[in-house]
Length: 173
Image 1 (cartoon, one colour):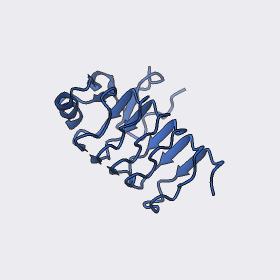
Image 2: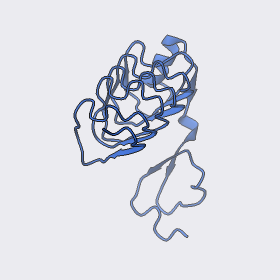
Image 3: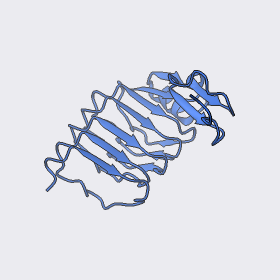
């Protein structure tokens, strides 16, 4: 039993883990999933879960995956996610923002609850979903910033950083 476990990291090297492998971890507050897809109902009703980081190896968030996770206040979906299943985030009554960096993510009809603001790129499937379902939508295009070679000034407060070169931080002090 893992009833006292509060934090779990499923590293990028783990590409699959069994369904309900964390079943009974009722005090889980922090979760990192690097590369494994998130199965249907995998974390359903984990009310203590507050911090979830989804790695760029994840491509699918299954039906009801985080349904009823009332501790979640925000969720960031990386560019790698291609589909969000039915009711994946419904019942997350405190989920105020869902930021979707994937431009072509398929959303099930009722993927999230009405009180969630969706952040995404203009022209993305996130914007289409928000508009079709009557959600508030905020474009993140203006906060998405590129840093090029030897341009290391003013990066500390950026909301998103895309690095075009491995030498970007070389000689930054």
